[in-house]
Amino acid sequence: MTAVLPSAYTVRPPSNEDAQALLELVSDYNTSVVGFADYTLEDAEDQLTEPGFDPARDGWLVFDGETMVGYGAVFGKGDHSQLDLDIVTMDLGVETYLLEKILRRSAEFAREYGHSSVQLDAVNYQVDAARRDRFAGYGFQPGTTFHRMRIDHDGPVAAPVVPDGVTVRRGAQDEASQRAGHAVLNESFEGQFGFTPRSFEEWRAAQENFSAFDWSQLTLLELDGEVVAMRSCTNQFVEDENCGYIGRLGVLEKARGKGLAKFLLRDQFAVDAAAGRAGTILHVDTNNPTPALGVYLSVGMEPTLVMEVLRREVTA
Image (cartoon, rainbow, N blue to C red; front, side, top):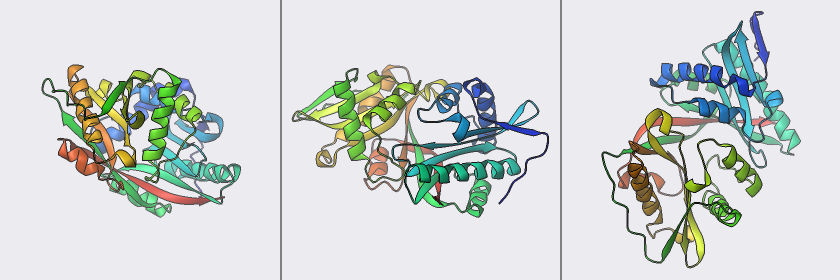
């Protein structure tokens, strides 16, 4: 595929000053597909300042005159064996153009990091069947499906009883606590679809760059003197849905079956309700090797939106 843009179109790298225009572009697209923006200005700002993202090499904006009509970017973490792409446009020619740029940059990443090939992932709203079919034509295949889960809070929620022998550590302002949470995250999510382990320094930089997060939102569970579970929450759904968000919840394999995940869920429900939140949201991989979906359903959460990951291998 070789796409040529109309002569009136211009292309340049994104910058922090483009956040508002990016918000409008993404909101218009999302609204056309799912009926609401599902994106905020902070989301745009965070995306453009993601640690490790080099706008000059990893991002492209397409303009028709002064109007932004396309955005494309590719993001890598850790050893960059898995990459994430983002393409937003209503113009199919621009979509093809941006994907060509992303595929070339992905091949460069493979060479730079010493891989014979890399996995390139795209997230798609499941209801957007036309986009799924187009990406299939670009060589992408279904990878997995994520459900956005939500529980509503109509009033106060009772705090759950702490499991026997467990110590709850709320907040992680010190490096030792942050390292403990990072270690549980990497071990508990190992092998899950799309998860790339990151060094502590890379992970901490990403956390601190994320405007919707602060270290008070990291909760650890300690059992017999060892941190065995973690929950990381953010405010990324407060502005648009007045909901708390559980970004990551992990329990070490040796500590599973003790009710720790359900405790962390119900505990966050109580925290969010006390803060006046309308509900609590999280995302779950329906192909998760742990029975996560069943756990979330058992505590009263329900699916509200389905997203799919489309994957393609890119050779060096």
